[in-house]
View 1 (cartoon, rainbow, N blue to C red):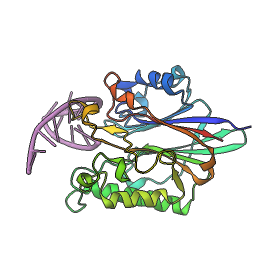
View 2 (cartoon, rainbow, N blue to C red):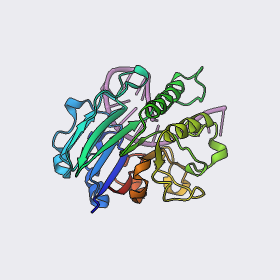
View 3 (tube, chains in turn cyan, green):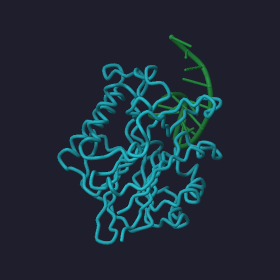
View 4 (tube, rainbow, N blue to C red):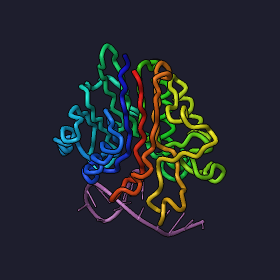
Amino acid sequence: MSDQIIVATWNINSVRLRQELLFKLMTDAAPDVICLQETKVPDELFPGDLGAQLGLPHVLMRGMKGYNGVAIFSRFPITIQSGMPDWCAKGDCRHICAKMQIGNRQIMIHNFYVPAGGDVPDREINPKYGHKLDFIAEARAHFERHPPVSSILVGDLNIAPMENDVWNHKQLLGVVSHTPEETTGLNAWRNAGFIDAVRHFVPDNEKLYTWWSYRNRDWRASNRGRRLDHIWVSRDFRNGLAYYRILTNARDWDRSSDHVPVIIGLNL
DNA sequence: ATGGTTGGCCCCCAA
């Protein structure tokens, strides 16, 4: 017998402002696990009973004042995995790792918020870009030293790695999120032991987006999207991949995030 | 080449 677990990832862009939208996510996708990025709230101010109200009572969070912040809501008990690296020694809140026991299987869930990287794709001029490249290089090195098993890695990775992960490949080659340095780095990280769970289902020549800028009058009409939000699974989970969903309609939810939820069903 | 919008917080920063 195999259990199926449904995992969602979403850059919610302030969990306090948009917590009501999580109930829509529950209605539409019935996830067992929700991983959030950009919660933008210190732990002591995190909405305390939100998880219980969602029916996902096991909650881990790592937040700070004003920006960054990640959280995991789960239907099943989870415990934090301690001893993870402090990426780029910044002490910021861009990663949380949970262990989950389902039956006799122990599953690891990594929730990442990769630095956006600023505007100029040159680390000499723009330290944020250097931070981003260093972050993904460290993450790659970590998973090469510790190859993932029974692991799910999700998050806003802030990189659209493939040509059809952006609305115009040539035009975005010099734009942070789609530069060759970033896409090469992200692919190397993934190849440390993961499969792109969404591209597992969707051919490379098909456009896929999870983010549309706020700076468009009509995001759906212009459709200048990028696929910045990802779900990867370790190679031992390949045969368990059951389905994926990108909740594009969430971009039209009331006061929406600029990112939409990405979901997979995984048979364990 | 530029501007466009949003959230958090304390007036400008990060995205």
